[in-house]
Length: 245
Length: 257
Image (cartoon, rainbow over all chains, first blue to last red):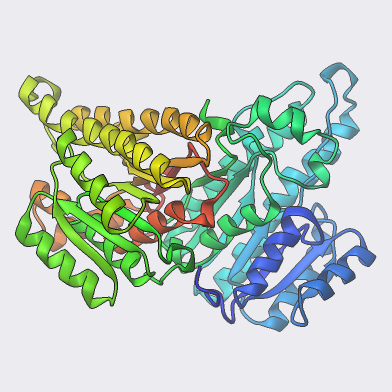
């Protein structure tokens, strides 16, 4: 990709302080965008913003709380009109159905599904107000199309994100607000740190390795830039072939 | 169409490069510094594509190829190996289109569309794998399917059958490609309505028709070959290094409902 594809663009990356979100924020900044990253941990957020570069801002945020959103949108507005939203924040855990209390179910759903909705809503408001369109990218997962035991809540949340994306693409297309989803497979991050790659990858992943966060960021960059200007309502699968069999 | 750094010096075969999506892809690849072998059936249109590649300052040529011919595939892959000393990318773009109700579709009609769209793509994968193994650098194969390889369309049963076959063929090939060392990635692209001769030859090219397509598309715009070239460049290059066996739909949102 040409290095300055996103020169002068303004982007928000929720959950941008580590893992996939941090890699996305770094790539967007490398391509010339001014980025606001959000997350729960102040210390980690400040360090992440500094590591990305001088123009990067960190705002502490719980994506599932409406009250936390105005500060994020204000920080982005100070950088300019919002062009790109990466609705990335998410959590994962494995709990069997009969051991799942409603609070655990709700906590994950609040972040993964309601948080994605609030990201979509606030991005839509900002992009409508300037009228130039924009690109919204929602982080779903291969688990939004397949599943695994003890994963009812996570799979439900990621399938929900996938379909929410399609509804939004249909609703916002006429205003040139594009909405797409990225479906990562097994990617090196804190979320998969408990898995043994040498054992898991050959069993589940056709290419026999986990992906890198930077490989997700490459795809996000394609979806964020004008290279994909005719693309909306699409699921971009980045999984080393996991869903192909 | 902005050049993509990762394509520099890659050797690419692009079928159906005499017009439409194939020609735009050849131009973008040449602009990006790739070495392009553009193929197709028409010598005259091929010469025009070659001139466009050279006008980009790019390296590349046109060679006549019928994608349904094994002999032609051998010839084209041998050319990549002898002239450019390798093969990194195959874009199986050549395809034909037909709109006919089921009861009016003859066996000859079906054979005609099947041979180019399915056998042509299969041979591109088969001979592409072979040349990429000989090259030893891995590779990426992009198969141009269609939105009609994912959903149905009245009057296009034969076309949908061929494009659906490409969707399945791609996934199997991706699994085999993952077991080749170094690995070969295989993905399919699913364009919506793209304003090319494939559409205008079938339906006519008047403005009212174009407006109707725009109105039916959530993004309220017409798809252009250049849009597909950008998507093919993403799938062909290392920008999609962890993407294989996937379907990339670029249709202005038509398939989302």
